[in-house]
Length: 291
Image (cartoon, rainbow, N blue to C red; front, side):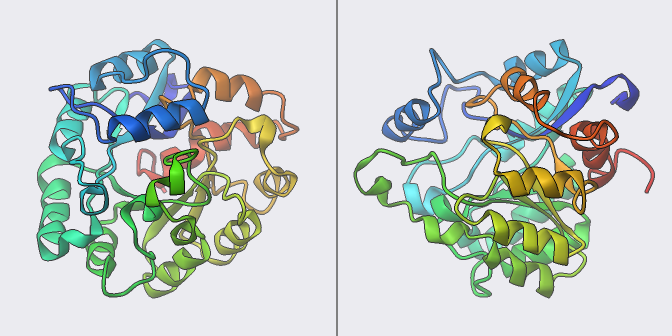
């Protein structure tokens, strides 16, 4: 990866379809989330199409699936497939994985294998869809141990989710699991774990800012929202106390990097802070630069 040639690093993109055309969301959830995000047309780019999309824009992207099979019954896009596509497009794609925390010891073994054999750089958790509190010691703490030991990253969805929005009962998806305060215990119990709180954390934005300010290993990505809707306190902290810990993320393919960057350009962000958010902070966190 030629870091100097990249204009930005998007730390939050989804692999939504496998090589066989299998989606990690069932049709009803997929359609509902497209309606929520007002996605026009088809939204299932292949892994190669995603790589091409970012290469055309001189950007790199962290890419992952979401494994919530225990809760949804739908298997994810295989982590190995995501990692292999990233290896084939190593100039633009950075592989993360996702492991259902209810897989237990098998999931822990899989996590280690994905790091050691496939070069995975981090792991995506979606507490609301996976149905667990991040600070439940009986569920995911074994996974966190492997992630901390291997120096990889734990990325947690936080706040409301568009998945299940508008479906009766929210398709059974509960928002309470994604309060970022549940990640505060994780950061305290694993002081060397690198953590990203994904998204503006509505309705818990202040909680996310408090955790990221208090815990050195906690960062915030700005994905899933157009920047024109960011809460003012998030913009303020990104400009000041958290300027070295805030990261560009789009949530592609539901929100494109083009749309995100166009709206970000209109925010009152300091000139010296913009390159940190767009590339420098992510490059450092991902180990693409020297500390």
